Length: 166
Image 1 (cartoon, one colour):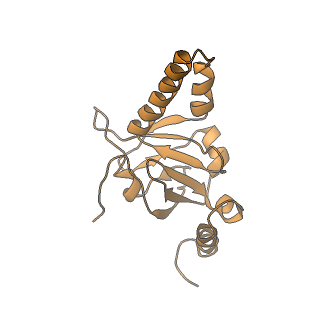
Image 2 (image 1 turned 135 degrees about the horizontal axis):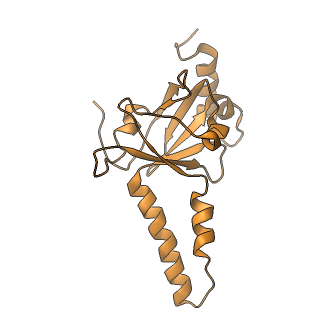
Image 3 (image 1 turned 45 degrees about the horizontal axis):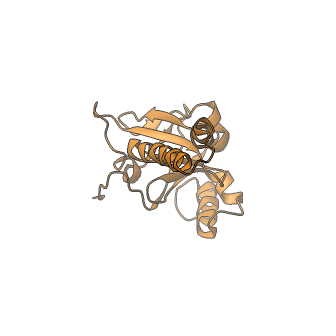
């Protein structure tokens, strides 16, 4: 049984993109996405700042990132420095969308997100604390900045289509 720790993501998992282009978030990640007041799991998905993948997190992390921008604004004002709050929000969230996960933990990425994960194939999920990365396997396998173990696993998954060793 998986340990459920809302807002904390660890481990690595793989999942196929279904025929409709939906991404199914593995339960070890999905179960840690906090429930909102309506009992739904809302996943915020955006571009990674440095790597060619997506990052995903719950409302708690979205709120924390918003609070950081507001703290930066307050600090700049207290020091009599210029701070463009709109630019800070744009930089952080311009490619970020909220998705309500269906009962199977799936979401259909919009056009912009599909630029990073493709329309078919498989994805890798990599926990990184308060958020997790969502990689399209061909991109992960070829990314020189990715962890070498993850690159090897992505290549092996693609070669066997997730069916284990040859």
